[in-house]
Image (cartoon, rainbow over all chains, first blue to last red; front, side, top):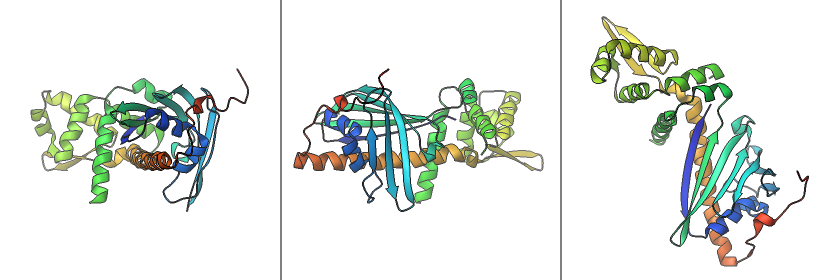
Length: 144
Length: 126
């Protein structure tokens, strides 16, 4: 199956600073964790093809998120595969881009769940829009 | 939802006309003849699209007298929707945490390192 989630945030820091925070295990341990939980365990072999693993802790237990770096283009683009229980331990792809905007940087995360081979054959552009709209509608209904 | 059903759903929504029909049914239920009138396609073609949507269980048909009334079953998109909702929230929270982290760090100036990429290079070389 294929599904894409894109979120972005404008942050008052340089692209270099933000890029490094994504790649440095010491930084990841601090911010790549559930709100209010203990610091995550983070290890990273910071090169293309290198592996990383981030273990996040929350009241329900510890959850490992792991993957391999596929693009390291400082300070523009960081791309890596991403596996976790939520992806049923199959690879998904996360692409993070850093776009300077005045004295801040827009960080965009594009997370794509990879389609299986059959879905690839049938894949046509555009269908994610509708799923995205339903997701938003359901989310709004859930809050109402 | 099994893999097969998911594929059926994805190919059903891959077609722009079928997406338009789903969008129309989000607003309200509709008779097949109404849809055929509202879309610039023949009744025959409309029926074919609806059959595909029914097979994917995205659309349900109720027979009321002579009328065949169609309604949307958005639950069929449930697995994809659940995944997307979960990760949208996940990354929104992470980006908020990233902002808090770099702004706090800028105050204390703990780490002036700007060369993180050149960090670890241990491990097997190819």
